[in-house]
Each structure stands twice: as C-alpha cells, then as structure tokens.
Length: 106
Ligand code: FES
Image (cartoon, rainbow, N blue to C red; front, side, top):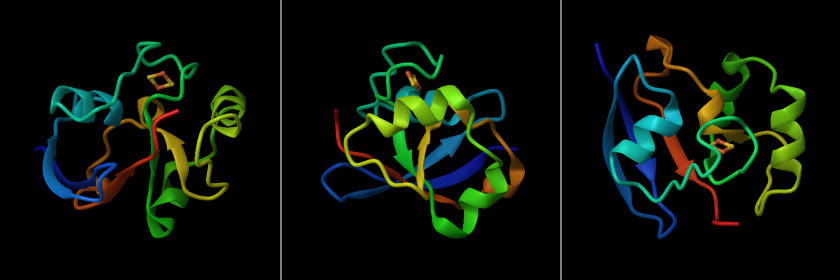
C-alpha cells in the first residue's frame, strides 16, 4: 500500500503526495513534479534532493552514511538534525503520514 505524505514546497505551500513502495523518497518527489532535480540520479553526490524530515521521525531513519553527511554539510540550509538526502530514504510503512519539507535550492 502507498504512503501518503504531506510535502511543503519552497514557497511554503503544502500538497499531498502518494509514495509508492518501489520508490525512494527522492523518486516519489521527482515523479510527482516537485522541483527535485536529482542530478546525480540518486547516488548521494549532488544535494539537489535535500529535504527536511520532522524531528520526531528522523531518528527512525537510522544513521546517515559518510557520503551523505559530506554532501549535506556543503548544502544550502543544512540542518544538523533534520537534513537528509531524499534519495537515501527508502520506503517504509512507518513513514506514512509524514511531512517532508523541500530544502532551499543550492
Ligand atoms: S539525487 Fe543527488 S544526492 Fe540525492
């Protein structure tokens, strides 16, 4: 079953989104026409898929990889706690109902 997400875009507008189990979070955003370039194709090397995950959810995603930390640290609007690369987040039923906020463009 798909997850339902709430996405806050860069203008602060909220919109609902369906996240299918075979998609990464980046793919769900990009395939629903949100402005996520994903120029590296999901290999944690471009930061164009940078998002903020709510504090109460981000812990459940586990640790960021070294690559992800390195790329995020250089990204515009990096938030130590809530920043993630959406290409590194796989589908999980527990993430149903989550609010995802797009980070500023680099
Ligand atoms: S798509 Fe490039 S870092 Fe996620």
